[in-house]
Length: 173
Image 1: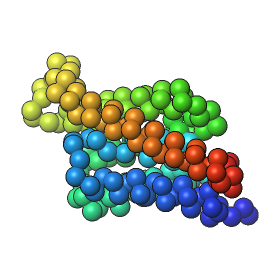
Image 2 (image 1 turned 60 degrees about the horizontal axis):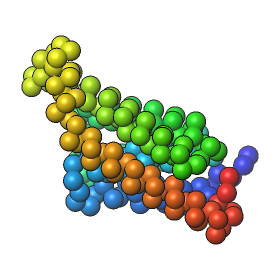
Image 3 (image 1 turned 90 degrees about the vertical axis):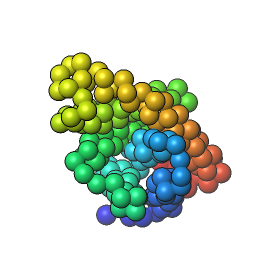
């Protein structure tokens, strides 16, 4: 059996956990590395199990510290899992354009799913199409922050790992 706990795995794991810790630093609403962590993990871990478990564990641990709980968090974890799948597709096709496109798609997916969950059963929004659109519209300022954060953190995660891989070939796939 192949040992997955090699230099590449440990480096990727450290990057993901450090990025998750950035959620603990005071920040503007939704300006966090959540989608970038999922996309980066899905694209770079050689093991698909690790690609899910390491980013999900980092998110879960930081959520325990922050204190995020509740049913709406299910939509966050569901979105996060789908973004890992986008990362699987990205995998070896990592170019500036493909990472940028995947980041934007991931950000939109996260926005659509999590705000749909906010709308469901929320008395602040009527439970009809108009209410759903009002919910999405009211979340646009948060989406702007999320998109900026996703682009920044994706650039940081993918870029730093790319540069580290050029300096240390053992990190290459």
